Image (spheres, rainbow, N blue to C red):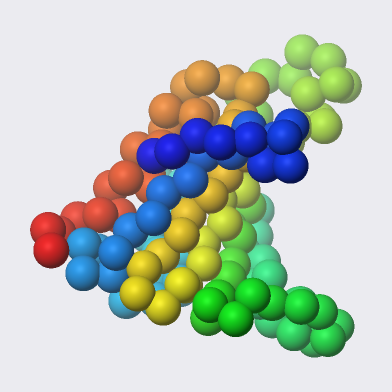
Length: 131
């Protein structure tokens, strides 16, 4: 995974998976695989899947030409609620875009290292076959 700063302030983790390196054929397949990881984790709650592409299309928004589909899976690692400030960084989401020849996965860096490691592992596990 690659780390970068989006708009010079948001720490983002990103992974590009060539379609030849995953058994997933679509954004829906990737979302289903991530949902299985979320559902299997005893401390993570699945919240929703948001079809960002459909939403943006429905409001006549702009979508980059190379994006064929885009969804976010929304979930929460909330293992503690020590103060109301943490609500600003919850819940988490992983965005998945179909870019034609590859999938692009991205998520904002969580404030908990254990969540970061888990989300990284979930994304990397999707590259389950070699080209």
